[in-house]
Amino acid sequence: MTVCPLVAVPPLPVLKLALERDDFCFDPHEHYIKQTVRNRYHILTANGVESLSIHVQGQKGEKTPTGSIQLDYKKDWVRDHLRAMESAYRSAPFYEHYFPYYEKFITTEYPNLLEISRAGWQLAGKLLQVDLPWSTAESFVEEAKYDLRRKIKSPDDFPADLKVRSYFQVFDDRFPFRSNLCVFDALFNLGPETISVLKG
Image 1 (cartoon, rainbow, N blue to C red):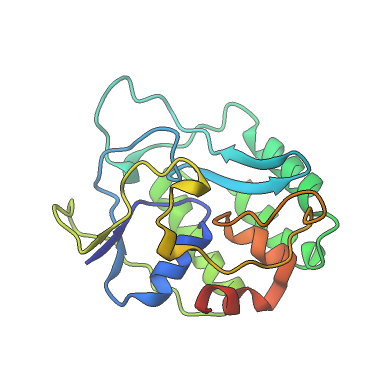
Image 2 (image 1 turned 45 degrees about the vertical axis):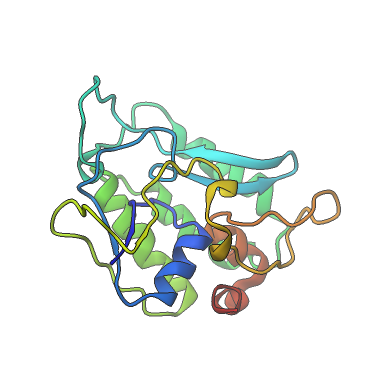
């Protein structure tokens, strides 16, 4: 079995893994780990790679299953995410086409990480025009052939074999290619060609 933690906004390596393996599934039963891709995604801005955090309610030291972690909309993090995306990608070739989908997704209120992850996964499949089955483990997976549930905090933490090939990015005049960002980095820059990067 190939197991991945829930991801609210899919990173490219997770999408690549899902397209390569028939036994891919998410584990919503693992204990939540703070400051990881479970509630964070990464974009490329004029200042380099930026991490955008989806706010969750405090856990008070309890070991809570990731899927049950509730989202916190008391602070206006959604507005900050919209502004960051606009600032980073408004000059990208496919920004105007894909941004409305992102905006609708991120401004919808979800009860927990399981539901926002399901919505983000389904949206990625729709925009990539590829079948991305949503599969979750029925209980905590003790052992897996390929396990991504370790503490992936930054794009550099993904295994090397999941790195996608380089593509044009908005700030390529000031930065070398930044790999393993969220799916919207590729969609805004490549549009329909994103799927070829994931399968290449």
